[in-house]
Image (cartoon, rainbow, N blue to C red; front, side, top):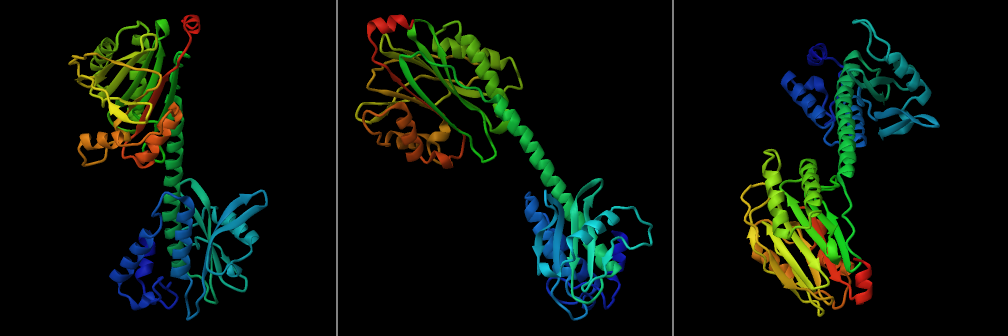
Amino acid sequence: MVRWLQRFRRPATTEPVPSGGTPEQDLDAPSRLTALRAAVARIGTTLDEGATCAELTREAAGRTGQAGGQTGGAAAVLRGGDEAGPAYEAVHGDPAMLPPVRWAAAAAREAAVPRGGDEAPCPAYGGARPAVCVPLATDEHRYGVLVCARERAPYTRADTELLALLAERAASHIRHAREHDRVRGIVGKLQRALLAEPGRPHPNLDVAIRYLPVGQSTLVGGDWCETVRLHFGRTLLVVGDVMGHGLEAAVDMTAYRSALRYIASADLPPHRVLRQLDDTASAEPERRPATCLIARVDPDRGQVTLASAGHLPPAVIDAEGRASLLSVPVGPPLGTGLGGYEPATWRLDPAQTLLLFTDGLVEHRGEDIDQSLDRLIGVGFASATGVEDVIDTALARLDARHAEDDVAVLAAQLHQRSPRGHEAQR
């Protein structure tokens, strides 16, 4: 690169012309370097490989496509192509100016052979129009070939070294983009591995669950829902929210979820389940804190017992579609080791829908939480709707698709079952 910069400073009538159209011999050395830096900065502005190739060909055609008073340069990237063979991509300028693909492919193979220090770095085309082929490569990684053509004036050594510099810049960004895609793919696989379906509730309970992670590239975060079958037809409903987002929060989420399933198997009341979860989490210094709401639904008694670890209260929707919040004593988040959780029991009949949710459903940045909850209470739910309809209405009316945080929602309704059928499912 230093060798090229030295040559770049040297005035010559065959020097390339910048995309602005002013001959570079008319510029002083600082201006030339400024123009070069600007050209390099315009390559690799995104993590999209196709966009990077388009930026490369635009700069290559603009900076070397004009010479000797002639205009009309063209540039393209040559790839291996599909089953039909190599093909030009990201063409900038008139495609008819480019040399035959067969020559460019052969030139690419020739350019890949190591050369001596005094030899031209790239082969030139001897057809009707001058053309040059530059490897799109960095270190041992090759991503194709940059092919350029222009009217009349042959490409100079300075031209090809300029193109090589631009191609190296593009190749570096392509390598970064592919590495980013590879890592994102690994993260996606890990996230899918962390996804676990909630357990099945008793058949005396209708349950629907919806999860919307924040961010387009995220599959799972720290929010979660769970259902656990208990004895005597009862079901434990759980919603939790681990601090933070992404893969790290998802890892802690699975730890909380696994611990919950183990502790819940002892059929403890909700506030004691929270106490044991808190003890388990606080014993691990690296575990992130989490909020959690547990509801034990007992269809036989027509009641729900709730306990909260720093979580928002649940809502209940009546037969007319009116929503209200159930008061629950709020204890500290899980992982603090403070304990102090208390239960609250409420009546629940088949005409009502119990709605548990994480704060992403209602919260807006800079807004008081009471205002956020009032927005949920103000949602008009249609009367006599099922659990899926209730969730769809809540997500749509509260614009959950554009939420600022992960969203997890669980809706539950009691079945009206005959005593005989109820005994059979115990």
